[in-house]
Image 1 (tube, rainbow, N blue to C red):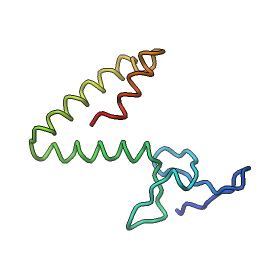
Image 2: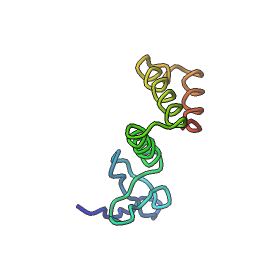
Image 3: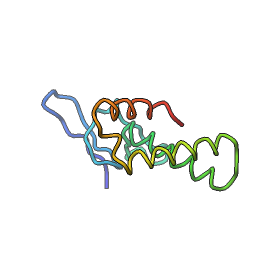
Image 4: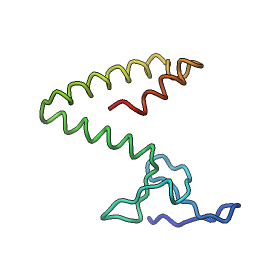
Length: 101
């Protein structure tokens, strides 16, 4: 399976993210080092980075790992209750999520 660039109406090539499947311009994607045909969008790259840090934290306790674990528990609770979809409060929560570990 290879990522074939598709030409959009604007004439720019777009590629699909291998994680979420959405189409993005080349500048909005990250290519994996050993597999340059694999492209990941920036939002999915952030998600994968969080997952990688969580996996590392499982193997060794650190103070920052404990903070990240607490933030993740709060994030899971907010999503479970649907607060991230509630008007201005949801917009605020989604905005601050970009800056949390």
